[in-house]
Length: 264
Image 1 (tube, helix red, strand yellow):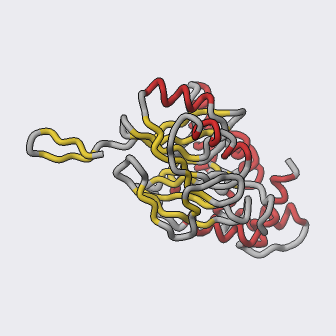
Image 2 (spheres, rainbow, N blue to C red):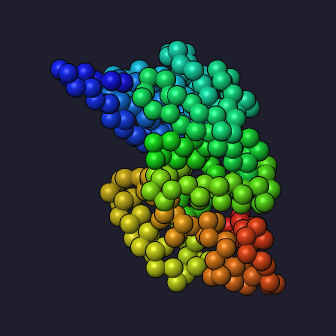
């Protein structure tokens, strides 16, 4: 949106807000005070209330993958709003199916995002990055990553490496409030990580105040998240000790610590 005030032309600021849904999901809403774009609406009722309370028009929906807690609210929203849906084809009826490298101009907002294919959690999972923000669904969590329901360890590791290569000041918007549980596991893997202990103190304070632990900078995730640190000697050693045999850095280390986390 463009705001004109006399001879000057300024760009309206886009805000991002978390709408808590279901048990621990966040629906991320990008808006400029008039139009809103939603990411992964898992249920409709709280979103309808949120849109109404702010007087916002639903301009578009972005979907990262087909699981019900990410798409379950779409039908209810479309019954009330005429908005395009962008995402993978499974589980949705997208107005536009997206593919790796697509650049989407967000309807109603003066902003765009680029689609990144991130197979692992599901084979057709995608993320959206733009304007210094990463909406990563269930691929990347703060201090964790998604379970491998469909993809291989090699696929998920490659997807995470691709996300980790984004600029460090990228703000990471995950789809679940899993941070404290993920930190507990990460400290099992890397108990001497000072950055991780500081992240735990911060996350505890935020949750005590009733606030999300997200977004978080990608630079902090590189320092704290064991699944982004599979090339570090400390993570490889911990994985080898857990496996009871030597493992190599990278994919083998990732596979061991992901299986370790699944045991929790």
